[in-house]
Amino acid sequence: MVVLFVLAITCARIFFVRNTRNDSIVLLSPFAFLILLAQAAAWGIGTGEAILFYLSLIVFAVNYRGFLRFSSNLYVDSYNVIFMILSTIVLIIIILTGIFFFQNRPVVMDEAKIPVTKNVRYFSGSADGGFTPAEKLFEMRNLTVTVYTPDFTRGNKENDTVILFVPDKRAHVYNYEPYLMLLAKAGYKIYAGEFGFSTVPLNTKVKVNIGFLRQRLFFINTRSKPEKYFEKNPQFYDIYAREYEILSGIAARLEPSTKKFVVVADGIPEKSFSKILKPARLLSCIGLSPVKEYKTNGYGFIEQTNPLLSFLKFNLKRDKHNHMPSLMVMETKKKINRMYMEQEENDAQ
Image (spheres, rainbow, N blue to C red):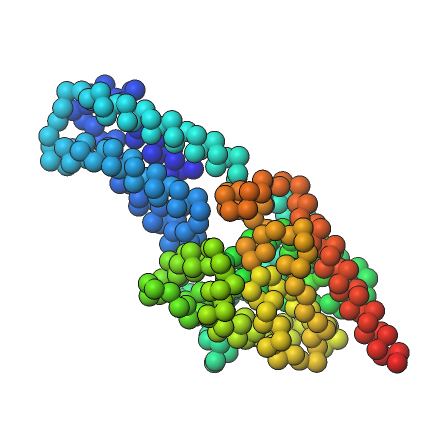
């Protein structure tokens, strides 16, 4: 919204700037690019950032001549008619984009009202050499583990179960947070691991090692037919299996030996189940995508966390009531209870 405000001020100056000889506001058009670059470096490039990039490009193109004049100390007495018409049209587009963004803003969960404690831990290492806690200030952090712990004790099955989760590379743990928070509210402790994207070998035409650019390229490569891409790149199944094994090892060091582990996955990680080296504590694996009501598999619960992408890609509207995360929590609980029942029946035999 900051970028939209800067772009709107740049275009709207035709209505309030009286002294066009001192048109310093034109400098805001390249400043918007700098803000976008900073956002991309911090949080990555998403659908909203891509839209803002093209909008910033249009605004800069409209103001390019004015920018050159100001930089060269060349002044004009007034704005020409064509420039004013173009600025007005672009300003209308900016306002409409702002309204569209507001209507599709992320749903904010009131964590204070949910009896769950969220703790984030950082680790440094590699898939081959193992991971250790990243305690130094400038130490590389290529694994983030978010632990969701219920602030109460429920039934024995919930209390004895620890859930392990690794998101699809097209999403982040954040995109699954409505589901993970509600699942922890149901009584399960959860370890959600997000591994550094730069450690994943991509087979893309453009070779880059910058995390947020690599992820965007991955998103583009899997946009239309992800199944074909993963068939040509089976290394992802081994990567996901190894990531679950690493996360399982971290949880095993922190949890009592009586705890049972359940792997929950969405999208491509589900196909790595058979490759996971199953320790004795691993009860079973659960996939989210078989639930037919769940349409955004591989991308997470974007009806809450990224409604803009949800609308543009899946034509699904923003859901502020968390219907889908609540449904998926119910389905997950059913599957876990069924696993315990099957285990009890096997033990009885």
